Image (tube, rainbow, N blue to C red; front, side, top):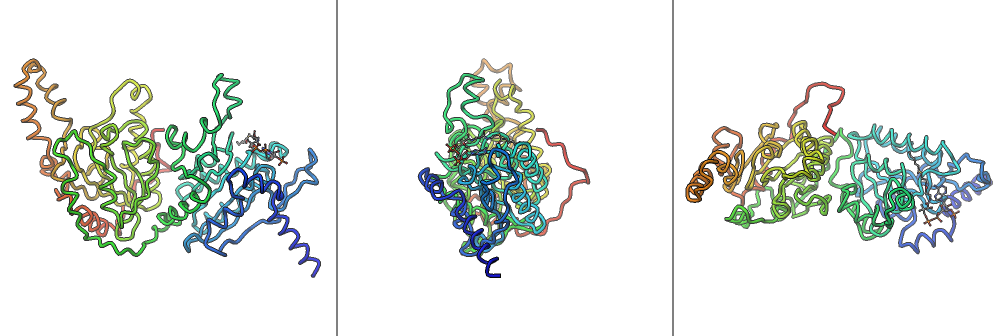
Length: 510
Ligand code: HXC
């Protein structure tokens, strides 16, 4: 017995030591934490339960037979984040560069399977050189096993990837299929083919950071949702983030006690929208003034800034916010903003999170660039996402709601539950100038006549009352009462039941 205990302790010590002090020091020298240090920071103190510490790889080629580290380069298990159950895998770069062997993959699959059974989120801390070269095709099989589970878990439990080192080749496709990707600046990168291959094939010279670093993916490609300064900030923000999410599609997000009353008025909102309807204002100010305690967790803030997405709470319950941003491209919809918001709306719908939509949209962005790159298909994604969503949907039109974009932005016609307009709302087929130039084309040479007709149009259509007369909006509300009206609407909708017709799955335009 004593012998077994001694061996147990030796194995545990070997697993904890990973690839040894020299490699741990190298990891620290790069400004990165080790896999275990990350897990420690992620979970509440003393709550982590580790599994499969004794798993070893099965390779014998290339001298691998005598190079075995218990745990095989990934720390897996579960623990509590702010008291709530979460499963984790954390790749250990000090063991074969965190590369994925068959055994390493089977550890990840085990916690994914368990998370799905009990209904708890899965967090992946990625820091890996990709497929374990010595493991051959078995490592590719391991990746595919993980991919398959990513797909099966999609919409069942939230999946979050934190990229904290290399993530290259086919390995990127596991994070790509998770719900959210966070990265660490100057420390992590993701690409399908690295700078060397790029140079050979396309003759472009590019650094790792330029090709697939955190800034690239949060500003240019939109692959990642957020970029953090370092490991510690990323892990602490992930702890904050997970509090907004439900554990699975079977439950609602936790309700958090708040001192912020739902009835709170916000008088400053009455003067938020400028008199001139072409003058921008900051939609984020409105969002922060409406949600509990001004606490808004924005996603993708530096990508497609013409639409704002993120989580907040109303009376303690999580909501997803989607809002046009008049400060960027006048808040129009384009390819990037449509894709960004569509995926977010679908996440909310999967996970029982009500959607609050703020609308100030002049329409879709015109141009050959947009048309040739398929704005038709991409815009349809957002339309599809709002239309299929069965969660509570509350919409506030603050100013412009023109054309097809009016329909798309969670309108009454797409089963919006409560649709309000501010007095400044302009709901019409198109803006006054464009409309007059089409229907009174023969008057175009006569500036006075055009001005008069434009004014008539503005008077007649650029207001909330035409839509109000048809019941397309439920009420015209004072901006200062927005939080109260949203809170009451969401309280009314708390037990909403709505089901789409049975189908195997839909066929969203991709
Ligand atoms: C086995 C690996 C490895 C791998 C790194 N190591 N990647 N071992 N398989 N894929 C080992 C190294 O031998 C080294 O071991 C240790 O990890 C650290 O690696 P370094 O190169 O010293 O570190 P660094 O300079 O920081 O460079 C990191 C790296 C580089 C950029 C990730 O190691 C690299 O390019 N690795 C190969 C990446 C790759 O091509 N992977 C396969 C991609 S294909 P020692 O003993 O010296 O510490 C793929 C397909 C997936 O992933 C398919 C899914 C469908």
